[in-house]
Length: 318
Image (cartoon, rainbow, N blue to C red; front, side):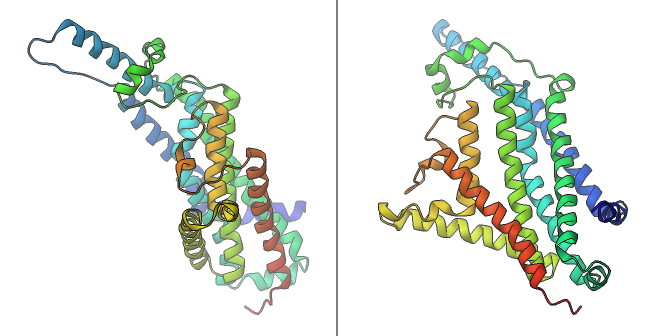
């Protein structure tokens, strides 16, 4: 296994697409965070003419609440969630691209035959490739997470007056009536960030399976994207039309479980109130978080297992 890992390193160390993803995603996440932090730290209310004292007091309370609310996502450790959440679409697309590229291009370039001839043990070769992909994803995610933890030191946003968030009536007037609103613990922030990492792992597993099955990186990316969109649409239709006794069926879909995992993590961390977000959808059936996580784990493990099944049975004639 050690020689295979060294060979993998020699293969990827000069691939620009790999390092553009590994280093580019943290750079984009930092840029998005800096832009949002600049916007979050500025909030002005202008008035003209004579304003009654009671309205001045109301405006001052709403301004203080808005400043404190806008600053919350940029305070440690909430900043970790903000940074990872901002990079999540790129993490998913990047992990799917790496998976499809490093697996599908072997067939497109015709090098899979040489690999199999040199290493008849296909499963060990695929295990090494999986470890490489996992390492690249963890490296990218780790950089984003560390930047999220350090960003408040460099890009400081004035927290304002946190006590201004204690009045629900004021929050309701500024359009943020959802509770709870408050600081998040480091463990809660890492829990939410970890749930987003699982989404990237699921994207990598799905795109990798499609690449091995279709033997093309580009086709695999297209097929994985179409499947995810189609599954989400079908699951939503089934939830709204199936009788209550059968609503558990669409709840087992991959896209539904991913959405639910993020929502459950946010509720556990205190960043969202129970019953909000996608759980308001027509026909949504709430499952215990542990059950939902187990279903998602079965999806991910099953997709990775199909990698080995497909490659072990594949006829290599390229």
